[in-house]
Picture 1 (tube, one colour):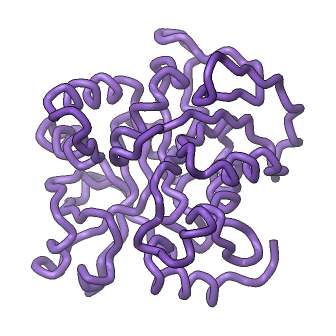
Picture 2 (cartoon, one colour; picture 1 turned 180 degrees about the vertical axis):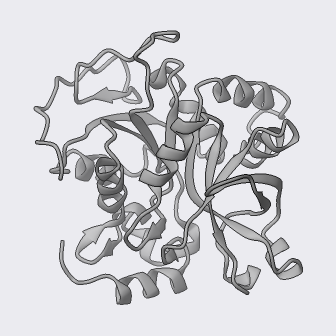
Amino acid sequence: MRRPVHARGRVHAGPGAAQRVRRAARPPPRPGDPVMRLDTAIIPCGGLGRRLRPFTRWLPKEMLPVGLKPLLYHALDEIADAGLMRAVIVTNPHKPVLEAAARQYPGPLDLEFVPQPVFRGLGDAILQAKDALAGAPFAVLLADHLFAPPAPLLALLEAFRATPAPTVVLRAARGEASGLVGATCAARAEPAGGTAYRVLEIGRKEMVDERPDAFILGGRYAFPGDVFDALDAINRTLPPGAELSDVPLLQRLVQQGALRALVSEARFFDVGVPEGYREAVAAFPARA
């Protein structure tokens, strides 16, 4: 059962257009605070949706409807249903309609908008939200990675809180060809007791063609706050303007033996590619 809708907070606008906007005047948790808990998810929305053109020439990918509801609302619903309190939406200045639509979301979440002026990859999008998290743990949810119920975010959060180690959602490849896998990567993992897995390798998506036991990342992550330091360190090694993806971070965590995983059996739709979007539209009921 969902919590009641929060009252909208004040808008805090700093100098210049590219400033984060807060809907709730709720102070962030302080590092070391004993009550600090994972209560926030980041939704990266800075990409331009090139794999979905021509649809995304006029409408942001996250606004494409599935079941009479935009993908962004599916993501926000999953975050709210998992019991989180806040979503930090990393936006692109060229997608103003997305922020306008997010402000109309009727659910019980506090929303905060952080700009990513130039899209430089998923790792950079996460790094843009560093100040908004203030050292607290957080989840990441990719709106174009859509799961049919039961969506795995709640189970991921429970797994993270039990460890709490960096944890990702994996899904079995089940013979899926790499050509049908969108912009994601593959993994090898082994059981680590109960429902937990230990990730042994993060690699290119062609791994699913070579290894029948390979998994595919499912677009759901839970991280402790110190991963921002790791992302900062990786970013400093890159040439100016180079893409900062999530892969170097995940590979570093694998090398440290620190990356855990949860395998989801829920039906998955890669809505970032035309084939996946068509499948999702056909599978989801036409109701908001």
